[in-house]
Length: 73
Image (cartoon, rainbow, N blue to C red; front, side, top):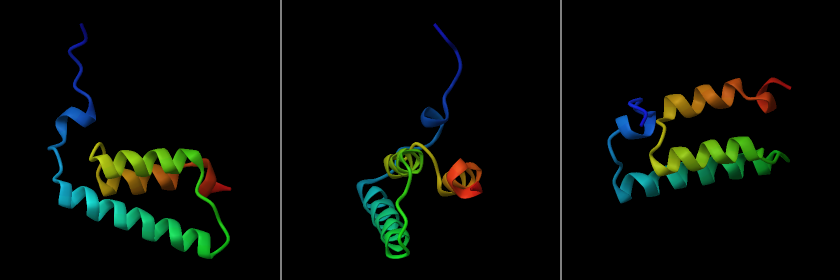
């Protein structure tokens, strides 16, 4: 059995209110991208889902998005 601790187990659980706030943030950002004619990649959507679930924080989400191939191209 592995003794490694994952990021998800080290972060405190988020409340339902925080999860709802994160969902609104992601929905707003997605809407802005669509308004400009874009569509978020599956990679970005997976990151967004992890953020909403509380697996990653906003700093980690932002860093991962900035490192994604979509942003670089």
